[in-house]
Image 1 (spheres, one colour):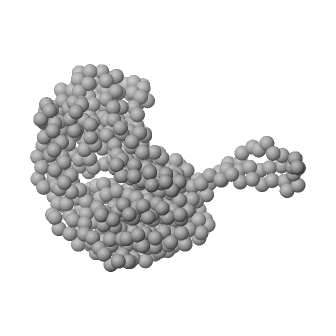
Image 2: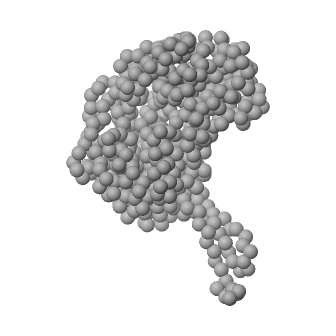
Length: 482
């Protein structure tokens, strides 16, 4: 069991109340970690620490910020084994998934470091004689990042990296499901030498989440909020931010369509579907959630896809498996309900279907139709629907018949045709001849519709974490009309 303390003002401290809560290993049922159960007073302390550190950090030169973030990337990468141990116990993820998380998180810090000198403005021609007008970007203030458990190192780091690069101080509200992982991110930054209060990480019991988040967003010192998680919670975050007139960056749920056109390379499409559907047991916001295939090639595609899915080992995440534990036994029970619903309504089980505790096999349901849960709802697990269509137009229509719009894929040997289809899909991301699951630190990452708004990653994120100000230098002896 990992005994944890939260990070406030450069110190690792318990909750002011002394309360703790336990995170349970979803596979073994044992206590994975024990973390401080913060209250509103802890939230206020984190805000005060971040606010006190802001004047100094915002004036720190870009070279120094870059050097510290690069060092933090190295420190974080060096803790790959520690991240893996904690991730397996807290979330049921596998060691390879943890290794990928740590590698990409280090890349996110390095990309953020490269952005410290890209926070640029412009000179704008003015109609007033003798006036120099400029648009200047500067740090916004204290930024709150709220990160989820499913890609915990990646998304915990993403919640804070660009905010720090832009000269803001940050508070990371750790996920209740992985406090140890998110605190280890904070520890990495402290060990790299970030000044006290620049990075703060607080933890809370699940039942206290609403009041903690509300207190943090309401704090006048907090000027930016970013949240990655479910659309249901994202609506609440967006409403709270609107009430307090604060910009929110929201990356929410998804129901990513994976379109296989009739001229697709079937083997290539199978490879992409297997990875996109079952990486991290389908618990990724970009996970392939609807496999939409032209009926002219569907039989061959489904046969090959089912054969591959049936070969994926599932079990104890400490072992040599592709699919480890889902985040909770309840999540696994939900997958059983998805399967039963589909079979009751006429779908055909072509791979998987079995559950043992919190582990669910890679499962494929063929001939899925509207009205089935797997057609309409985000599963966030390894139960995937195959939807057969008669035409390209029907594939596009079904892809867009969703409240979500995060990631998508189109497979075709004709790139121009695929580009035309991609242009019609309502999503923030579309990959041609690649899986729906793909992320790089420098890319503009985000969705449309109920998948959220705003963009993480690279230059696109600078505008999310800075204020654009109009500054003029004028002739002090200019003429006025009165």
